[in-house]
Image 1 (cartoon, one colour):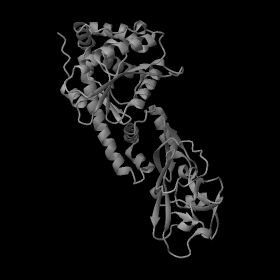
Image 2 (image 1 turned 90 degrees about the vertical axis):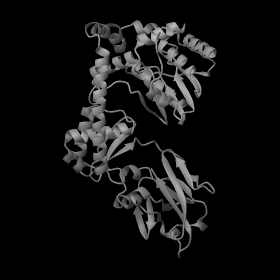
Image 3 (image 1 turned 60 degrees about the vertical axis):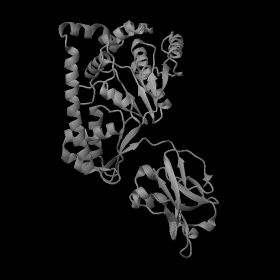
Image 4 (image 1 turned 120 degrees about the vertical axis):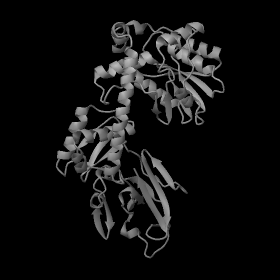
Length: 436
């Protein structure tokens, strides 16, 4: 009889006190059907939701959704379908996976656990695919047992279980499942490995799965040591604004510097670029003239240089909003990825008798009267405020006149009030702060 008892690690994740709901990725195939059956029969389980992602890549996808709905009705658990659009460019497998995980993330909250049915054979296939495609991570890499996804966690309880064991369980429990006909077509790399290469290797090396798992475990430990070293390096090199000295990076040597940057990107959840792209970008950062602004463009992020340091920043959102009055009684306001706050101060603030100011974006070449007219960009540049903040800074206006530049606490920049609007004597007022 097939034994599919949950191991200690899987049970700890599934029954964590923080988890209030299991969201199960349910395609209707054998693996996810077995997973769903196994979870439904757990004692003292939390709420469940089975989620079918319709990629629209198969003519039968709507029929499969109906099959999944029927199974969930039998199991007496909630079911939902989400249709996604898969980009036509690039690998259909990669694009489908990206669309699927984005759909999952949109549904999940921080007390959810996304439970997926990947198994040992999937692990073997993924390890070989990563090896053949040239994964940027050092050593052998496969599917992680768990990982973060947005505010939630992904868990794969069957990752150490062979497909043959899962099939035996499905047959013993008289489960019904969908067979995707595309799995028999060898055009996709994964199918080619699954149907032709790995069976041939297994016929010659019967213990291939255990050998690969041993290699994965060994290389995982090596990566953990590299990650620990990178975090120690980052802690010693990073300033309180999260900038990293380019000169200090250079003294680490290329291999150790690249390890630091890869680790920083992984911790932020940024897709790792090719080693060539990252290495060339770092060389450009170190070699560019002081008046240049070199970038390393990444997926959703950028490395930017400022005064001999590099900063990992989210790719700037396009800020395009109309002037608006500061909401009555509001202390905090979020616009795009910018936060503006208002504090009452005893002295040096914007006089309260000016009424409610308007907020708008700084305009190109705009000036402020501070004893004399000065360009705002010059004031910010002299205060060592970086260009990515100068280019998208909100300012305060009243009756179409600029009255103040808000404080930028992260860069030690104080609020600047235009001379005609400054208080004649010390009195309570408002200090506006902007955070990026």
